[in-house]
Length: 199
Image 1 (tube, rainbow, N blue to C red):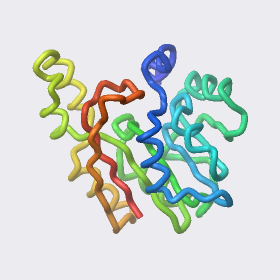
Image 2: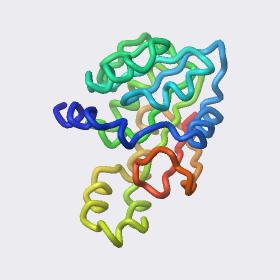
Image 3: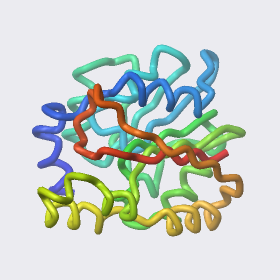
């Protein structure tokens, strides 16, 4: 837990919602004004707030520092400190669940995905993440090989993600490869990411 509190101190110095990424996430979630949505591992709420113009939004993160920062930005979201493996919501609560660049922080994928499936009604679980295979091809590896290698080690492979989703009850998987534009506003330093959308 300490690492997330440490990250929270400087998170917003480099991280902010990229409008293009946010727009793609909204399309995949099929956001509607009369539906409720959950952002899991929401951090300081950058993407939650970018998408909150439509629908009713909730944001959870295991870091109190992250949630405190999110709460200071806006009170239109129901922010809460919670573990993804024990979400404080009833079954079939949400019409969509979002998780942006956070699954590598989960203790284990399958229990987390099962819990997400439990609170999800007839809607979509949309992931925005990166894989070790992708990261091994980033141009940054020429300059920072050790840093990229260590970062890649944290990321679950595409095969592991799909296996865990199937184990958790997600049977329909669609993948959209996403190429980062030169005008990227979210400085997470990764050049190419992948959107995994699960229906």
